[in-house]
Length: 71
Length: 448
Figure 1 (cartoon, each protein chain N blue to C red):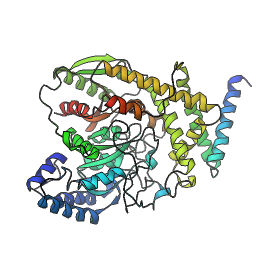
Figure 2: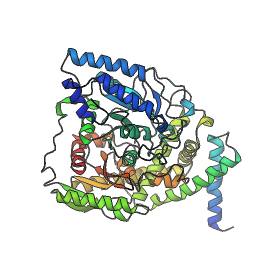
Figure 3: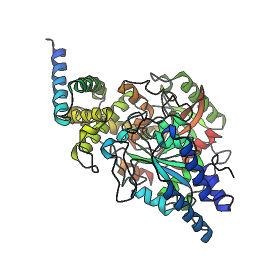
Figure 4: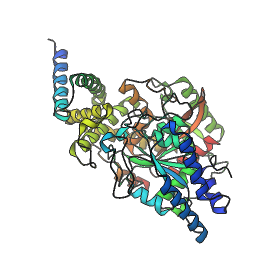
């Protein structure tokens, strides 16, 4: 098994464990459908890791910014 | 008097002059709701209460000339905004019998203004969706072509205004849920500055992104609604003179016309509208913005994490917590959010997304320092056919241009700017914080 396949298996195992935790009633068919979807989605999310965020603080709420700039 | 074709502001003036009554306007809307049931715009119609409220509004107008411009005007409300004694289902089986014991702040404001609420509109389940096809109560059919979707998640609100079943409607916008359906239905959809209107009593999707806003038939109506909802009656005049655009600078994002998936007719209508703004006296300049695809990914990381946290924590009203009654899209998003917050992903995805959000916000603020407003298409295409898009990723892509604006908390409006095969096309106008009057004024010039 190469590294890519190993990484994919690790990611899929994580997704399946999350599905079992948050949707305990999930059927095998639905679980497979969600696994396919989430697996693709998480790969797509990796695009954000290439953004240089050195020295940048996380932004959780824009309300203060909006209120300050709006005055 | 045939009131159904009037705009909100024209109707308000007509009621004020005594040319028609609120009861006539409400009866007209209720007749159109009943006559176009097949559109499925409403989950609950509050007909009896609306007629009583209309009678009270007419009495108020007769007794006291000093009333809100919304007094007696029929308005619809998205079904995720709590209303005392009226079912608020969020189009979810899990809340199908939920009747709030209080009014959301925004409903209380509407009632104080004397507005008449005609019913609660259909939507994507828990506001998770972009087509209105995830509603437990069935999909809304677009009034302009009943084989097509109205957009989402506020599809019922957009479609009911287009169908003349309400003179305005409230919606909510987390990552495009007002602007995209407004474009699909050919109406004006305003997402105000984040935090400018109270979200208290909104059954939200993602608290750091959710914003209540409006659907109307004109920009003047949108401004009238916004002022009334802010209880700011001192500056509600809306006069856009002929030379308004002279001296204004319109920002066009570099590469916006080359975004993958952008429909050719939408691209052409967008270009034509930018040319129109230029001919009307505006200066057009290119501005650098974050990659729309990256912003969409950031939006989905943050919104799914917040939605999962809300749903799994049991912080929402009775009924929620039983995930077995949720539809497929909601269940997928719960898993997506839980994965984003799980183990190493918390730092790698969620915290990194929150940092990139800060970068995106800075880029928008920098871009808006070089221009007055920024314009983009509102959506990638016109209204899609019912059931045509089965891949959730493609459905999410329809919010490409809207999501980044939500991350920054900026105000934006979608106004109609053209047609393709009889279907409306929308353009999004983005402004600085608290610049709703400016973006609506630019919108007015586009619609003239």
